[in-house]
Image 1: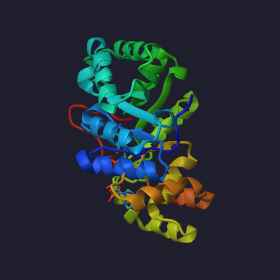
Image 2: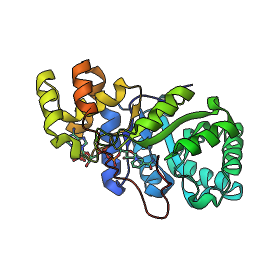
Image 3: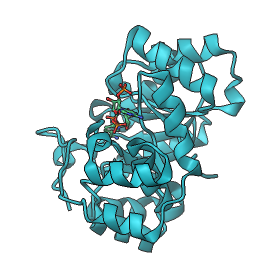
Length: 267
Ligand SMILES: NC(=O)c1ccc[n+]([C@@H]2O[C@H](COP(=O)([O-])OP(=O)(O)OC[C@H]3O[C@@H](n4cnc5c(N)ncnc54)[C@H](OP(=O)(O)O)[C@@H]3O)[C@@H](O)[C@H]2O)c1
């Protein structure tokens, strides 16, 4: 089993906005969709998928368990609610959205519940999100490396997360880059613009190709059909070593997602 390299992000998008985004994305060829319990859009996404006529078997759906649902008593019932909203009997990937704040729910218990969900066929694969090196090390020790399908973390040209990336590579754990476009900011970047002009590409494609070339999956979001379509073409763009080096130099440890009271102590 593996994780698709290109998917659709849906954070902040709700109601008709997310329905249109998913419909357009499926229409232009996306087959993987990333949602989360906390996004409040699983039912809208379920509706958009049902209306699209795209068969469930050709889709890869990811959801994430919110921090309130990490205990063994709540995890599976909450995942069943997600499945009902998404109008499916299983998701392809279920992630721990954030590590339990302050370790309130022991990681061993959450991983055990996730593994039970997998055994029941409610999810094909399991994984983690926003896990730091110590947390990822703990998850590997508890569940085994081969059980952790991905660690979904913020990685953009401005936050390259090199220590975590090196650790994940050494351990053979796959990473998914979220906010690869730095929530749209990267498309204004002069270095990315210059590289894009050289390749007759867009700055967004350059940022996405930069992440893909390092082996990360990407899940950019967009409300615009033309952006959805052109972003997907990033997979065809091949950046040179020189391009990669120029983007490597943009790293400035600029983190966009770090909710107070929830985010762990970053690496
Ligand atoms: N695990 C976690 O804790 C976590 C946290 C954050 C995000 N995520 C996931 O990662 C996904 C991606 O992150 P994100 O949606 O926050 O940010 P993002 O993908 O980095 O950026 C999305 C923004 O970029 C713009 N954009 C997209 N393509 C563009 C293009 N070709 N040209 C110009 N602008 C473009 C979009 O505007 P338009 O709509 O105008 O195109 C939107 O404002 C989320 O949707 C979510 O699924 C996970």
